[in-house]
Amino acid sequence: MTKDTIQHERHPDTTDRATPPDHPEKAGAESPHLDAGEKDQAAQHTAPHALMLHEIVREEGEAALERTVMALVWSSLAAGLSMGFSFLTTAVLQAGLPDTSWRHLVSSFGYTTGFVLVIMGRQQLFSESTLTVVLPVLTRRDLDCLLKALRLWVVVLFCNLLSSWAFAAMLRLPGVFDTEVVDALDETARAAVGPVNTFPTFIRAVLGGWLIALMVWLLPSARSARLLTVVLITWVVAVAKLSHIIAGSTEVAYAVLAGDASFADYFGRFLLPTLAGNVVGGMSLVALLNHAAIAPEISERR
Image 1 (cartoon, rainbow, N blue to C red):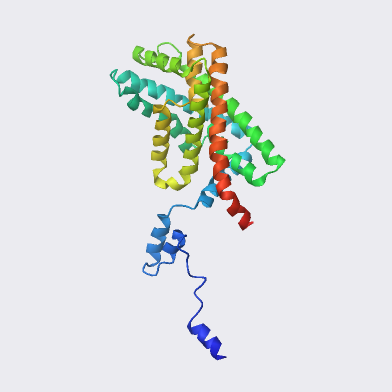
Image 2: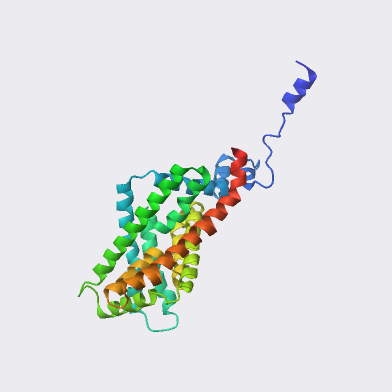
């Protein structure tokens, strides 16, 4: 054994164990003043790398793309019904609060109910798929993946909207709710129809789709704060009066069934501008930008 070999064994190269300062998650794991249990605790409190968030959301999208049509149908029908509780709970809170300047701030918490049910129940909602399903398409870049994504969007959107109309019809049944709640439902539904000039509705839908897609992006790193994350972000959507294609569909469908709006209003003043805005906000501003930030690193690792 040579002298150089002996020196190498006594003083092994520490290059592999050294951690660069720009990777704090590794630095915590290799910290010499922590025992094994403390290192695990430090790793659990480290925010996931952006590439890891991208992979978690992409895997959710891949799983959704592989679901059968009937699985998508039942899950999206359930999601549309669940979202109706956003409309109902908001009206119930509004009916029970005094007519003050802050009533909207409190009643908007009711809007979060449907999103909590859908996300915690793992039901298929169209606005989430503007992020989750787009990432596999951007990563794989093949026709088969694109066709699966289009199939999912069509099935989920149609079933979400169909069940939103079913929920609105249930709310119109006479004698189910008190007069105060019915009045609040009518008021909320009329406000959701939107102006004749659809540009403001489109912009509100862009912002609404942006926030919902960002919420989906944040959920993997939220851990035990998932519920709080969903409530906080969807409350902002409600309090800012932003537009959401499924939550708003129940409200505008109720207005149509009550005779306060027409089918032309539903499609022209609500559905088309809101759908376009949600897609732009969710797919372009979140999916494309977040993927673009990670794409160089994905290419390097390939």
